[in-house]
Image (cartoon, rainbow, N blue to C red; front, side, top):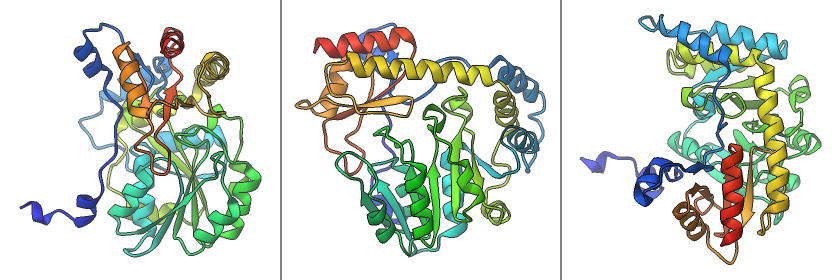
Length: 352
């Protein structure tokens, strides 16, 4: 019966995950592993978010609110008069927006190297994927991107970019918005760590979506909840195309409470900025400038996988960048973890 599987999935591999810390610990007989591969917040969730989640658990015998009002109200209270959609992680938002707008054969443009799920989700909808390589320093050539994305239904741009860490300026984003005919999905999963504010662009452009997530700064990666700022015209069509009852009641309650705990977020942002600076200064390999909660490191002459394997043997899990299309095979991505994890990483990589 495998002949029934669509040819696009037979030709392309799926999403590539980092090695599991539990598997490495078992393989090498270790009790504690530095988990620096998945760009998570290593700290616990906000006490307010935990309390809200526990209260919501008492209601899970009922379907969640299909309008996710508890979270929508919290988003408006936090950010003001914007339009929002929600999903199961930002992945769910991406997938639903593609399903809403893209017909089989339509073009979807992606600035690469970047998050691989854009292409996987577009391919699943039957889109023609057009990749637009970044410059040697991983900046975006706006004119090249505009030319390649001229007729694309959706253009995906990640800023700060995963895995390179660099951000695209608001001026460059505005140039892209003015030059393309379709929608720009600006992935802002790591924007809180950058200090860049793209929100004013929402008031001036009807072809901009800003994707966000609770997985990073808010410590809710395990609850899988994402959202996006959208133009006024998009939410009704998004709801029509979306899966019913997507966001569960526990995730919605925790996310709404997390938005109100600004001190929790600010502590982690300060922690990330401090350790980005230390890693950049103390690691002997070239560390690329980053506006995210991770850094990308050039480990040449080692390959990505060889370095990841050697670090794993010594109790540190980082991400190989070999699977990122358009990126040479000598980069690793390292998340900012707890103090002891970051210190262990610096000590180990400098000893190699």
